[in-house]
Figure 1 (cartoon, rainbow, N blue to C red):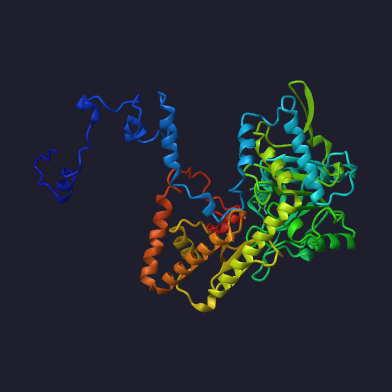
Figure 2: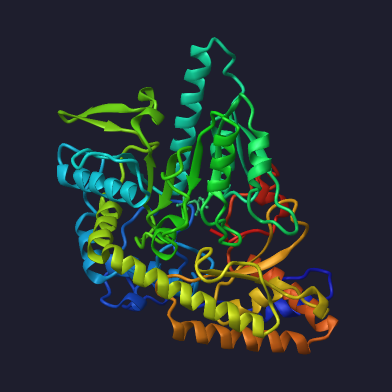
Length: 516
Ligand SMILES: *Cc1c(COP(=O)(O)O)cnc(C)c1O
């Protein structure tokens, strides 16, 4: 570096000491090139992976595989991710079937009629599990597979909206201002459905004591423009089951013509096995449609959901497309067209491999593990926010006891656990429930008792360590937490467009993330 007429500063001296990295090519030695046999000896190992521009040249497949695999090791470990309901374990036989089906496009019914039929078998089994009113043995129930509950809920919302519009038009009434009644604890996909399809959202807000819908308030909100009420079997935040029967009974009692859709994304494969006497499904006359996520307690890897209708009457015909694709007519009601067949096949495997007995054993074990965790956390002094003994989903939502006067919050505990590899989210409760913070552990199939004990030990350790810290130390940790979150890439390469969007209930608190 040349510094004309200037005295070198400390910074200049520092810069002069910077390493000048070796330029391998200028050495002219035989060695690193793309034809080397070893991945880490190739020139690709010494440069950044392409990020923005598609590279001009190819790279060997072993190198591409290894580089991407290495890159992904900085992702969390799915089995330690206790934030999510989504399946992280399937048997090898199921995996084999699913890999075999990778190359099948599910929509191509003519080419893959068996895959299409397998979907119909799953729909029938699920509809019957939800006690659909008697169908004769040979008719298929009305329903479809989807990418997840979100797509299922969009379809159900469209069906309710269309049916309401048709009815209004037939009566010569205005059909331009549909609304839907739901709890403020709904999953974000309900807000999406309402906004994408221009349906006004009418909320029954949570309170500091109640984190589920109030049936009376919900029914009071119904007016002539209401297309339906959403009732949740397993609220995302606390796992509680909303009282669908009470909503149903009020509608019947007051002779109100309003359908109920049950969002059983998480509870649909739990309640029928753990609490068969709980009446939440098609046994209630006002329930017209139900969705469930195959990839949650349906025990299939991500990418499958289901929606079923009580009767074809509730799925207006104009929403169904008869696709004449490569020669065959087949009814289709989805938002997507092409998709893989693997997930539907994986679901069929689980349904017939496990049967009701298998699902029951798994769900009962999960309930037992979740009760055990709940008790252990209570003994440590945490306040329990979720149900036990199968009265809600097998998850544990908990928070610090405010009377204990801790200097740290739930987010600090979540961060400490993260350092041990566990992903246990801390989040703020649904709107109008004050600024209540809590944490949640979802007990999934692969979260065994021994893994649970390991988690309990780590929570104890984190808790004890945080209790020993003074305010200064805790503030330093908070700073560290913030910069850590940005540095590990969560915010690094994301597009900031719309990030201050405040329409979403979930977005209002800005702190509710990783809860899905
Ligand atoms: C997970 C969830 C959804 C969204 O389901 P996906 O399958 O992830 O699309 C909707 N509602 C509830 C209650 C959920 O728990």
